[in-house]
Length: 400
Image (cartoon, rainbow, N blue to C red; front, side, top):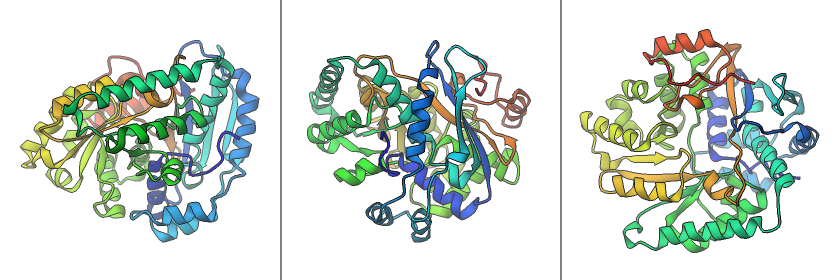
């Protein structure tokens, strides 16, 4: 089995799922898979993917896992009680060859949001690991270990980087589960306080690390269908989040509608209420400069707020961003694929994105147009009009 625990996922899946349980328990959603790498043939792996999904759906939370979750200050007791009864179900997910051909596959997840939200991360991990098993060569991990040592040396070799903090965000696109754990333990041993934690709840529990994460795009996308009015869906999402967590988990995601729309909605109230914001698309330095200027215009000291960078980071990029903003705001860095799948092969750029909620199309319109995923062109045009978003430089991806 590739996935052996339902904790082997990102923390924000649990934090979002708690909001779903308490505020949107009747929501129904649809997710679809996309591989952004051209020419990747995943069809031969369909049988193995389905076998692994069946094994995933046989898992239940153990009492020790539930006790760990119950010990997190922001996780509520009734939610843990629900997880004690929870089990993923194969009837909500299908894997098949895509009609587009060329080795593409369709993974469709459709059903109650509460019962499908935990599929995404382990399914992506399964696809990744099966694909790279077929490519794996003798010496891959030796190459990976050398690259990891070089990254650690960059962070430890400069006294001016004593305050830098990175976190592992690499569960969904890791080379393998075992490699992920080896990387984390090496980082913990060699980086000390420079390793802030991991998004992976299982490894946080196993190795005494801090679990990290708040909200993902799917949460704000679903609010397009669940909120009172489309134009207010972003503010509705932030307000519902604050209602659930009462000041905890205060990092807002900034790129569901692009930075312009985010700043229009992220007014003085939200500037003061939230601890910071997360960058996940577009040019990061420009994003940081705009966010700092926005805080200053709203009479908030940027030095009291956190800028979280998480878009395709490498260690040299982390260092560049840290040096740029270190004296002007707090900064944090979520490094994913570059930590957990840098062994010599080209990583897969695979995603599973929500495309519908309660039968209505939902979408994100990020500052990187190639990250958009929606299968309804008319809805995308309407969304741009409502949020005053210019036409993108590149066409959005169609859902498979």
